[in-house]
Length: 358
Image 1 (spheres, rainbow, N blue to C red):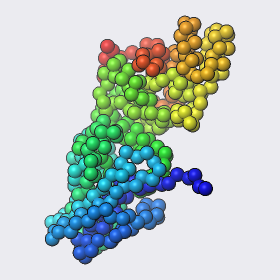
Image 2 (image 1 turned 30 degrees about the horizontal axis):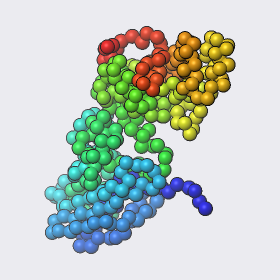
Image 3 (image 1 turned 120 degrees about the horizontal axis):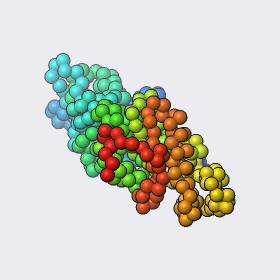
Image 4 (image 1 turned 180 degrees about the horizontal axis):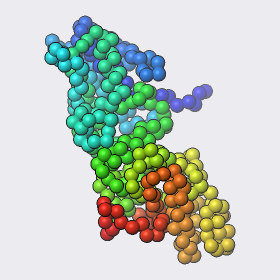
């Protein structure tokens, strides 16, 4: 029996298919159902319509997004496209309907004030409209419940207000590929740079993010939800630097960075306790750490012995990160599960203009 995970379709693919069905109905009076589209890499999926409405001057088609086996926040969401004829010579105009956001900050691949319908979905939508023989069309994309769903995404921090982004570069959702998260990291860096921020922080989770906020009072759009993707942050900053990056995370995850792992997920990298043991100045303590059950136990053993192991991990992680980050100056904070800073490198990080200390 196959155990492969089922792929799904992006919001952009769904919006394209719904638009194709709607514009054909506007021109012919009939909705194609199912409706087939061609994606950038040649795939030709067909989508069933869950709702269709035709009036004298508008057509609306709706498709329920199937993200396959990916834990996508928009899986099961209803994507709608409502089309109508525009004024002569206006071309194709995009509108944000209910549940689709509007861009309010620079640094994204769309100008401020535009509906958050990304470039590839726009290109696909323009193509299906042209293929149908239409010229001047107003396209309104909406997502049922999209404003609430957007609260569980990066959109509010990136300055996309009022709902979701219509995303997709290939049209296909690859289960657990994490490509959307990595893309959000890159867009987060771009937005911070466009806002002129000289200091950004990449955090592995909400606890480390709160610790950074308490320490530096950075604005929300200078905070990067790095998760496990240290490599995505560092490689993008190498190409698009800012003066300063703070990396903040738990002891175990940053111990993996010390060993050169750029994906810090527990299923894809492991803590090397033997290497941790070598970073203590006490052979007896080192032996206990090498035989510890977890990184947490190793940290507890070091703390009980008064050994600055967390500082050593912070410094080694900083060196690894700095090698990749290029012109961006890196400092590192090690955070325990209570949100307390237990290690840092360098020991005195100095102040940036945007980072007053408490």
